Image 1 (spheres, rainbow, N blue to C red):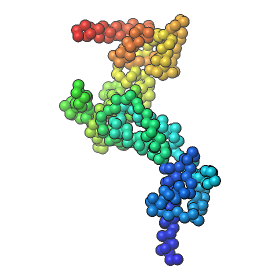
Image 2: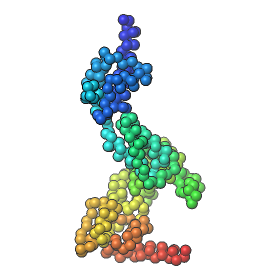
Image 3: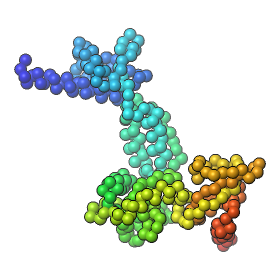
Image 4: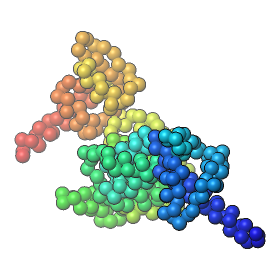
Length: 336
């Protein structure tokens, strides 16, 4: 045999091994291993011959070098990939999370789900399609979310500023650029997901931070010639405390206050403020929690939904602001 033919034979064998491994990754599992006949049939669809006399040697090589296992399927040997970077349950959780994310458009959601399901092979992809979970989620229409995230990621890595157009929605559901289409410039410090919203967090001019919703951002550009100022980068250390104190991502003066609440609403308190709280019992039906909140209309709106079952305790100034909020809204109802 000439050297050229020998190389051709070896290359052909490498291609065959690659296809066997790809077939096992896509189509096998411990519950459904593939027999020699299964593998031969799938390879022949690609025009690759898999001879019985060399099959055992090929499989021994794959079992020695990769996560390929063998178990009996009746009287035959069945082969499967025993380890994946993510198991089916982990992939399913990721898929459900993507489906439930409102900041992803329907097209982006479908794209993500398709890619994630392929990680587990065709069997998982088939099961995902058959058992597609429906979430009551209003998906955003902004199709630029991938480009936006990629640009911000590059800016964060390179410590560069970004510029973008920021949009509101009018009553027709149309995007209307702020500043008549003028561009914003900002120093991105981190990306944050909160309450089913995706934000980029940037330092404000004086103090605090500004949050920009990614689904409202368009035409995001990395300003390659503009580095994020060192003073802005230094403010990254303030972010953990800021996120732990700010209620519902809205601005307002942060205050430590006490909330008295009916004990059966404890879950609501924990959901909004976390589980590491200073809580004491007041009486048989009531308890009191010390929390950090951003005193804003958002906080007052949340408080009003409980009809007095959660109330501000021991902070006259915040109580007065809450009362003014309620009176302002009541007056608006009267005018209407």
